[in-house]
Image (cartoon, rainbow, N blue to C red):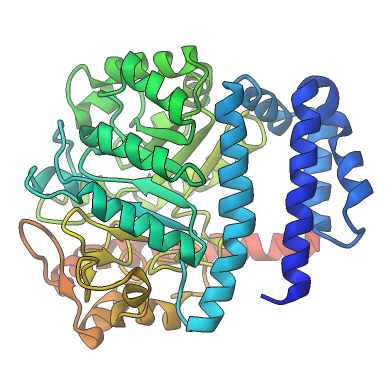
Length: 454
C-alpha cells in the first residue's frame, strides 16, 4: 500500500473518531447531521458510493437508521470498544496492513481468524461436525495468545471462536480478550453457558460479542439441538439485552427450517430479543455424521436468496447470507482470502467446513501456514467460479476441491474419522448438479438488472 493510501486511511480514522465523538453527545439529534460533518473533512472524491448510501439511509430514517439507534442503546464502553476495534483497527488499519503484507508475501492474509479453543461441547446437534469430536483436544491459552500476536503483525484484528462450544473455556476466552484489548472477539455459541457472571465479564473486557446459534422457532430449533435449548437461548438473549451487551444470531438453514428462518416473524423475534445481526449459513454435509437430506433444495435456496434481500430493506438488523452473498466479497473467502480456521489440534485449515491441511500451528508460523500448498492453491484459484452463486470448491464446484487436495498433498484433519476428499465431494455432486441451472438463471438476471441500474 502506497504512502497516499496510508495517508487516506489515517485521515479517515481521524474523521471517524471525530464523527463518533460527535454522535455520543446526542445520537438521535446528530445522526442526521453526520454526513455533513464527514463531507467537510473528507475530500470530495473519497468513498463517494459508500457515503451516498449512508447519507440516503439516514435521510430516509428507515431500517439502517433504526439499527444505528439500536447500537446507541448499548453500554457506552462496549460501544466505544467495538467502534475502535472493529471499524478502526480491524477494518481500516488492519485491512491496510493485510493488503500490504499480501502483496509483499504473495499470499492471502485474512481479515478474520477462526479458532477452536476446544473440541468439547455440552451439546450434540444433528449435522454438526463438532459433535463427533469429543472433548480431548484444546488450544492452550499460550497457543491462542501466540496466534493473535502473530495475526496482529499481519494486520488481523478480528478473531472468531468456533468449536466445540467455545464457552467451555470461558476463563481463557475472557483472558485473551483482556490481553488483546485492541482486537474484537466474536464467538459462535449455543448460548446455554451465558449467565449473569459471564455478562459481567463481557462488560469488563468490552470486546467480546456472542453469535448465538438459533435454528428457527422452538420446534425447529429443538428438533436439531435438543429439547429445552430454545428456552435457554431466549434466557441468554434476555440477559445480554438487559446488560446492554451486543450480540447476534447464527442460523444454519436446512431443508427443514427454511420457512421459519426466512419469515418476518423470525426476524421480528430476534430483533425484539436484542440481536443486532444475523448470519445465515448453508448446511454443509461434512463428516461421518453428515445428513445430506438437510441440504436445501434449489427452490428453498432461491427463497433464502430473495427473502434476505427483501428483509434487508425492512428490518433493523444487519443480515448476511454467506452462501448467497458471495457477490459482495468476490466469491469464496476461505483459504486466508478473508478468513482461515485453526482447529483445537492446531491444524490450519482453509475453511471451517473443509478439513484438509498441510500444516499445524504448533510446527510453523501463521505466515508459513498461509504459504503452505493448500493455501496457495486457494490463493491462485479464487474465485472458483465467475457465478457468485456458486462460490464454494466443495458444495457448488465439487470437482475443484479434490484436485487441490491431491495436488498439494493435504491430509484430512477430521479428528475422529478422516474423510477421503472424493467421498466428501461425491456427497455434494448431486446438490451441485441440481443447483447449477437455478444459479445460472438467478445470476444472469441479477447481472442484467445491475447493468440497467448502472
